[in-house]
Length: 150
Image (cartoon, rainbow, N blue to C red; front, side):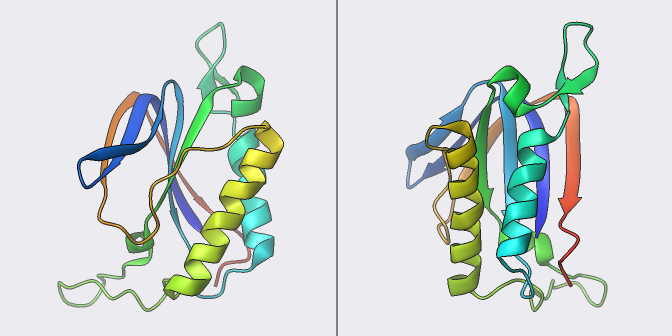
């Protein structure tokens, strides 16, 4: 599993002109699922996202997590994170999970986050054409990859 995590002051995702998920300060997560990913990757990713210390503390140091600040998290599926453009100019997506597997593991990460946070987690719509709007805070952008992938 691969995630691009951005610390944001606000973020939203729109489908067909309608905002379907939005947050204030917190993390925007673009999440891709690898063809070899399992529930172990979903567990690892949810745990890492909840505990990743990239939010600013009172001294403006990246030292706090979503859990420390009760900040928000928006998770958007993005299979293109597994696009491979090393050869030619058109990316190949053979490492991305098929839609059935990708949707199930994406939903598993979101459910694990919601369970630990105690409330629903805003998301995009799996497989839809989406527009993502954000204000990156910092800017802070971190790439995570579960150790079980590949």
